[in-house]
Image 1 (cartoon, helix red, strand yellow):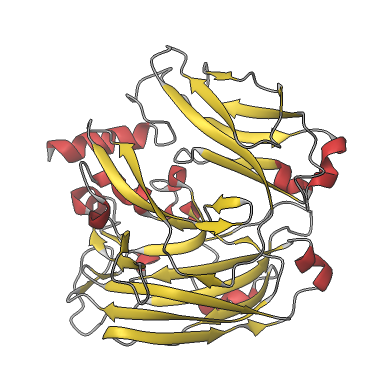
Image 2 (tube, rainbow, N blue to C red):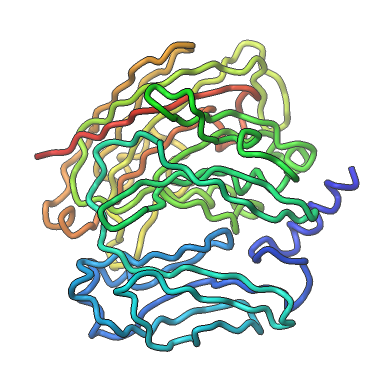
Length: 387
């Protein structure tokens, strides 16, 4: 129990920090990054894309622009960093991003801790038509108990280089782990895909800390979007921010799966329900990424709590869901079609819409209900768009 007491104390004090000893003036994070000036606005599809809020788990910051050919060779990038820290190159200094990523180093106020960030400008990638999950990196993170964890990061290759469009909840699960390998996390790459590699999502126990916080399970979740670890302990549903910009309107998505539900279905109080079986979930949402005031809008876990009411959301154009995913130990094909209203062509063309695609090993995992051991395999996902 001593281990979990230490974790609880540290997590509740300050989650949003870099890899460090959790003491005053040791933080070295970039919290946000932005470009100022009307002379730069035409390089972006929307002015809201000129500012990025940065999760404490991120070290790659990417701004999407219309074209690299018209991008100025000197751009002043501004940062908000943790109190007392310093950044090199200097905050607001002119930098050339046309030749590739620029490396920024943030140093804590006491000088003991450093963190590097890769900041890049890339042309907005064309919508992907197929996801085969062959590309994966192994990320090593220092833990609060002095060890390290290794986890898999999925990405896609575009004409402009790699794009890290896939997110998982592995970073949240890492709060209760120390010395874990990728296969010990809720989401990891498996060599036994339908073709080549695939993805394994499994529902795990969150241990004593999770049970104490009424979050006893960690469902395997893979989605297009971003995971904001800063909200895990304070507002878990806000930590999952679904969707990436898409300049085409999707009509159908297909893929392959295997699924085995866990044996004991429990709720957030760990009460067992012998008559309930866990279910996997696959769904997608096509929605507008700015609101009526022109502010950036993102679909988070709160917005998808009730999938049946998603089309009542004025930001949402279309929704697709797989009706059921029966248990099977052989690769089985699934498909889903989008229902709802068409998005205006000019908004779609200007990347004014996001496509969210979500996979989960436990359908009620966001409510911390499900069965430990539920396992979903996914591979060879294809998106069909309107011509």
